[in-house]
Length: 105
Image (cartoon, rainbow, N blue to C red; front, side, top):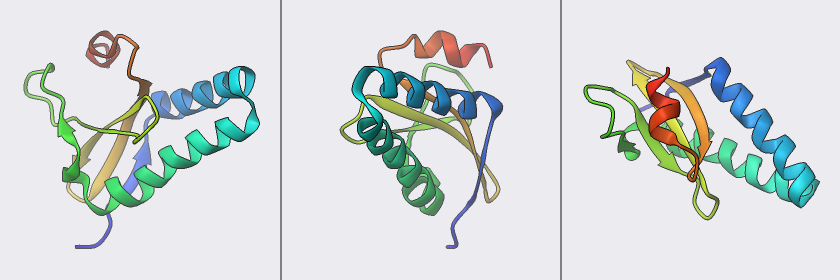
């Protein structure tokens, strides 16, 4: 199977910018780069190559949304698969109110 095409919602793009900006201030540029590079690596390899590898978002009934945890970092990548296109919906810290944030989409 070939890799899926990855696209990003405006919210996901905003999430990534917010994560980078926060980490630059709180932990420095090197940490911000490590975390955001790992997020992009997972999106561009793991999720793109095997989009069904993520877990289903069970708390939103009848959604095709899935998520993948960013290894040792406390972020989750929320995405939907439609045909051969992966839409990155949100990238959120695990301690945020995920249910509320995803239910407003």
